[in-house]
Amino acid sequence: MTLLKFLSRSSGCITSAETVMLEKQSLDEFLSNIDKGKAIIVSLSPQSRASLAVYLGISPLQVFKKLTTFFKSLGVKAVFDTSCSRDLTLIETCNEFICQYKQSQLNIDEKSNPSLPMLSSACPGWICYAEKQLGSYILPYVSSVKSPQQTIGATVKHHICQKMGLRPDEVYHVTVMPCYDKKLEAARGDFVFEMEQGDANKNSLRITEVDSVLTTGEILDLIKLKAVDIETLDDSPLDKMLTNVSEEGYLYGVPGSSGGYAETVFRYAARMLFGREVEGPLAFRSLRNMDFREVTLEVDGKVVLKFALCYGFQNLQNIVRKVKMGRCDYHFVEIMACPSGCLNGGGQIKPKPQQSPRELLQSLETIYMENILVKDPFENPLVKSLYDEWLDHPGSEKAKRHMHTEYHPVVKNVTAQLHNW
Ligand code: SF4
Image (cartoon, rainbow, N blue to C red; front, side):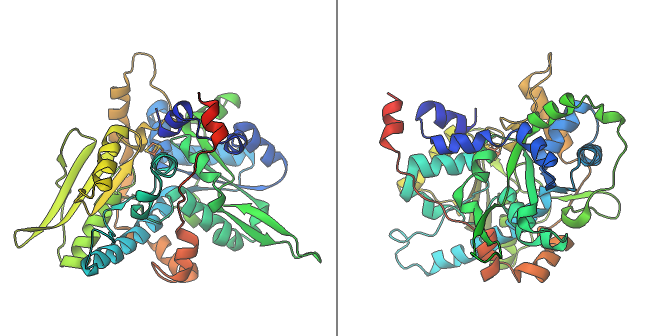
């Protein structure tokens, strides 16, 4: 169960306005926008590709190419890969971490003005919990970098649509994600901007970075609805404008099926702060369970970097408790609400009959890295060109405006609480 479902059942803290917004994110809405003549752009997550690949018995790259054929037959204009925007997210997170780490070294009284640990921000289930249940004591520790979904949303609506000769209001941007929590994320007011219409009254339009989120399971429903035999469809060339494809046909990626935040930031910090190149796989040690692991870097016998992966609600509560008591000695924690991370999200395709959830998860973990070329995000040529053409450099004013966000403690409304009694 994702945190969104947990919270909605346990505390009534999904507002009625949010419920209405979520209802708009459906297959019917997606199909009706195609009929309205909007330019539809679909951005596909790597976890969704893996889920469909296991279900269909083909590779994730074939899934991508055949889904491109399928979506374009419905009238979709372009199909992108959110791994590309994830690299942008990772670079901004690396940059933010270095600043925070240096700040923590300068803070004379680190206890009263702490800047670490930095807690990752890509999981909306975790963010929803932090804002609605934990509030002001935890939010200053959460990275300000948007998730890959919202990063690709900002990139499409602020930059790519212009390159395609379209206005943001002419584009309907849909992401395909492993969980329902992403729908709530897309509906946040923080991810809406105003655009002047250019008429005499100077009226403005409200533009949403991501107009709709469909889960992997909903894409399978769409395939069934259209009675399409995906395996027999031709492969289409991939849209390279926002998809990292190497000359050999591999997709760029990072280790870590939930984004590789801890891994990427750890290597970068080791190099930038201590001049150490960390070669080979990182030596994560399991603590309480496989969903709570840590890795350290020692210099001259002293631990200088201590990072953790923390997945699932129980492990997450443990970290939160330590932060509250001022006893969390991690520098960075990659937090994901789902046990085993995003491959196990609530929107993924369910196990087939005779297949246990554990078997399915193992298949997903095996297939996830298929067709992937592991690359340093800083070496991604598409991301370099996004900085050159649009964002200037990591941490620039433009990058802060488009790639970062803010979190807000949510005061529960009395009606919602009473309703829950
Ligand atoms: S861990 Fe991943 S799949 Fe689960 S709620 Fe968070 S973002 Fe969604």
